[in-house]
Length: 98
Image (cartoon, rainbow, N blue to C red; front, side, top):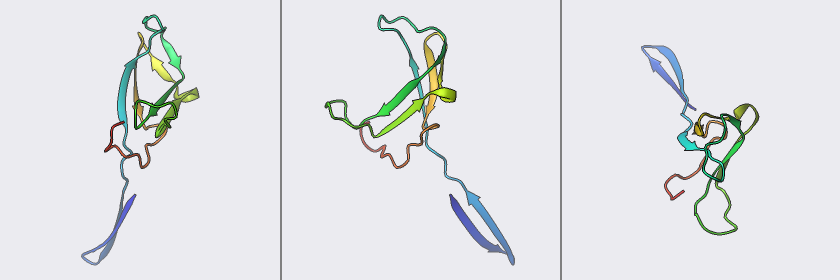
């Protein structure tokens, strides 16, 4: 949060500006192993961001679990979530392949 204090015409003026938390709109289709859309409902889904697509010991740079009251609503297999709204990205560097 940025806080500013100024004197304007002899009056003390203060204000605060909240920095927005970055989020990513992510849409997908949830299917069974045979490619059929899953039944409508709320599902537990975990999202990950990695810096590479290969390697058995790759550690996720960021994860977000959608469980309990944050489950993902799925209709006709389709879903849309705002990644970063449950688990903020923090200082994740987006200037790299993810």
